[in-house]
Amino acid sequence: MPDIPEKCHEPTSDRDLDMLAMGDTSLLTPLERAQIRFVRATLQPGMLDRSIRLMQRSVGQWWIRTVTNSLRHVHGIDRLPAWDPDRSVICVANHRSFFDLYITTAELVAQGLPHRILFPVRSNFFYDHPLGPFVNGVMSFFAMYPPIFRDRKRATLNLASLDETAALLRRGGFFVGLHPEGTRKKDDDPYTFLPGQSGVGRIIHKAAGCTVVPVFVNGLLNDFPKQVTTGILRRGRPVHIVFGKPVDFGPLLRAPGSPKTYKRIAETCLEVIGALGQEERVIRERNQSTARVSDR
Image 1 (cartoon, one colour):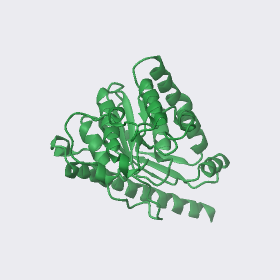
Image 2 (cartoon, helix red, strand yellow):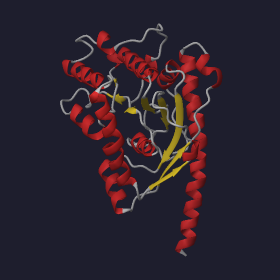
Image 3 (spheres, helix red, strand yellow):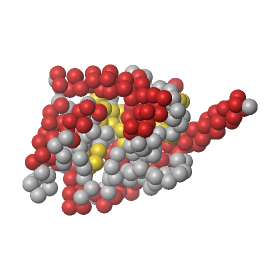
Image 4 (cartoon, one colour):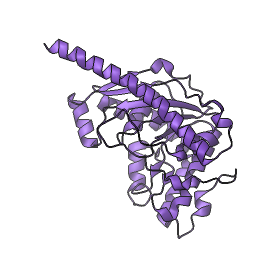
């Protein structure tokens, strides 16, 4: 997941913004416009959308779970809600690796998640390079949408990306993975987080009524070939995934939309994820102690 610049989250009207309507030739290149149009076409009801959903639920989740099978330990499955194919779902996760949401979503699909999967992604490469659509299609079956732009001159387009994400969620039948921290936390402490980004709060607020599932993930690498290799060879660090009950935001979702409200929603997500992190810490320490005893 990319950074979602805090500067972008200023109050707007209730009407959703549109990237293509805003993105003239000075903001969006012809290649970016073409790719946005293409992915949008796949999001419309019909055979193409049904085919992509099928591929995400079959091939997409199969290869991820296969290469992490020897390392993956999943907890809290009993806390997951029953999946309603007509109601959208948001998953909020901590961000230590490029692959946090891949492994999390693959597990949810294995647990019956029927939704079309989307991850907002930074535009660099995936939308501004000719190979971007190919990699997006092969790696995720076009889950990496909508784009988020890091160029300050195009910051207003990010509001439109966030609003489009919320609109899709309101439509129903979508699963969107989000990182409240916005960017990866790269230090050695997986149990503390970067500040919550209000862009995530904006999506959740504008998509009010969606189920928000929290998860804490620890143990993944940021080296894709090495992650795959260590998983296949059964030599990698254990990866623990801890799911929580759907987040209860109380009155926050009924409060007027504002940067303060959005920020508080993101912070609430991180508080819940933090509690799951403490569960994971206990589980990991207990397993390490058991392993030491068995090695004696």
